[in-house]
Length: 377
Length: 227
Ligand SMILES: Nc1ncnc2c1ncn2[C@@H]1O[C@H](COP(=O)(O)OP(=O)(O)OP(=O)(O)O)[C@@H](O)[C@H]1O
Ligand SMILES: [Mg+2]
Image 1 (cartoon, rainbow over the protein chains, first blue to last red):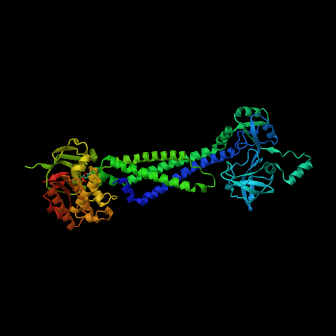
Image 2 (image 1 turned 90 degrees about the horizontal axis):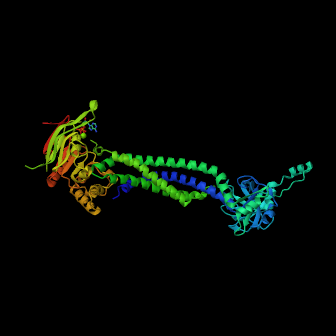
Image 3 (image 1 turned 180 degrees about the horizontal axis):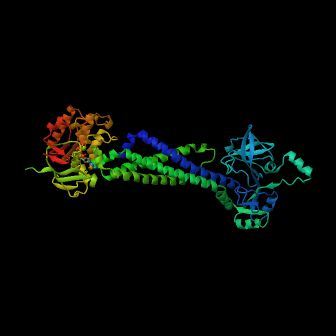
């Protein structure tokens, strides 16, 4: 007969309630880690979407995600002529407050040239953009589906295809439109401002501006060499895909990482204290039984086993419930929550260590109990 | 001349030092024979529980000698290394507040001490059932301690104390929670055990109604044995 198990069964309600509380706490810890992983995954998802090897941006800029970057629209042709470049495409990125069914909807608009790098890769439904204007591929995160009409600026866009899991690092769902449409959205002035500019005698300026050019290379071409060639144009900067990802994880997500990291550490510390307290009070509640066990001659290992096994059972069940909970609700979060098996493993080890350390406190207390206490004389 | 099973020789026990010093036992000597049922009486604070704890190897005396079953257990220091093992195998305790483990059923409470002494689950349960039958509580074998009446709980506690067939049984006011009829039944039972197991039984009691049930009454006053 296992004493730890029998005691748990005797106080099953209380034990389960304790486990439930612990599992909520551990669920929160896990979701914090998952939110951080989701943030990184989202940020990298956007950068990886074009499947580029080189990012051409404005000189001295680390854009287009970390900083603003504006380069002339004809840059792409120059890039395409560089030896080693297989394919290239102009892209724009911007956040837009769109309106859908009379409600505002924040979208992250990516403009691309159909048939060139930079567009959506995998459509879950519908077809690619075929018209030069007013068609849109939308991500399911925004709640849009095929046939929906979204108003952006002064134009109405028809959703013709959908993707999943693409959001900007700020959380806004991604939509793809043609480069032309996106340039109108980003760089065109309102009619009244245009009239004012014309009245001033301004030339009207060029609206053929893009945020970046993404390029793929032919096999065996050197990324460094191509980047160096591009940097020779004084108005351009070139970043490899790796550099772009590093910028995103280091600078764009860094604050969030530290914020969430600190908060997660605090939560872990709180969990550790709570686990220690629970085990300590569980032991205090059993002092009389422990004294009785000593009096009738039970060796220390029986008493240690009672405490450690209960601590472990609580940790394991609390952790299991917590994991199940977070896996059930993770898709209901407004932003992506990524539960990585390695994170779960590390957290499990941490909780295990906390349980064992905390039961050390209980064990110390238990071993000091005077068996005479059981006599109550 | 038979040898005593329990022999307390010139044992003293004090708590604290200086101003706070309490002499709980002063030069106490007591021999108890096999089969003998001895009662310990005396006013509150006279040292009854202290003496019982010393004999039960729960409390270390300040001076003197303790011999159990021909083994010198204490002579100015503990001579027996594993006191808990000795308690498990040679001494049975019966408490006023029966102290059954609340999370084990009646039969498990009794079987536990047999399991601790190394018996198999099956053998322990069989022996526990035998004891419960002997003490006429086998019909409650599956019950949890909280569901038992005072008398039933006390009989289960006695079954547990007897499980490993100890030659020394120590009881601290075992009948305090029982009515006089039940108290008499418990005392008769203890006597039967003493005779059948050739055990020494030492019982602390305030209960004058059962004084007549002891072979001998030892009276303590201020830590000394009264003549
Ligand atoms: N752990 C202890 N620390 C200090 N003093 C103690 C301790 N245990 C007992 N005493 C003191 O020793 C004396 C004898 O106590 P003991 O418990 O043996 O009395 P008792 O005869 O059992 O009394 P009662 O009938 O009230 O149970 C008392 O004065 C008591 O206060
Ligand atoms: Mg007492």
